[in-house]
Image 1 (cartoon, rainbow, N blue to C red):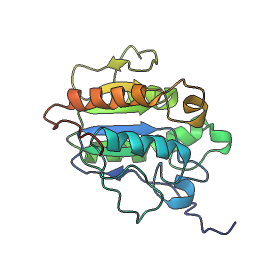
Image 2: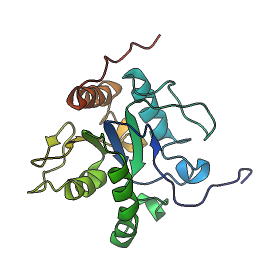
Image 3: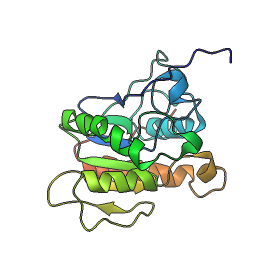
Length: 194
């Protein structure tokens, strides 16, 4: 109650020349919906940005506010739905309304070679958007692609439900991001955190 909330659709964030696009479900009610930057200021974002830092896509391991100095290199983060849905369950109408924003971002990100779908919802949305048929089943680490266009690489979402239960570990998440780095080609090696 003591904070001012962004409370509007949350845009994507990152390197406009990114070769790796990460797509999540939607902004968290008290994360991106509060801060105005996707995955910023919530537990899922803590996991995501720490992993992006460990694998060389981010200059720091955390993201707490719009002006915290976070810079992504060769990565861009977005969400399929742009506003925090009730109970974190977007309706079909919410998804369809927000798709145009995701499509515009994807068209502007002309260098994307890999799309990392964070969770089953993002996996299904991106499989359709990338024209991958038949639609591949969701699985952590699964890869799929159409004849042309980016590779779809899927991961469990870094939600507390998955990280607290061990369904998603740091090593599993890092492996997906390192695979994305490899598939994107031409990216330097991940740096070892000091």
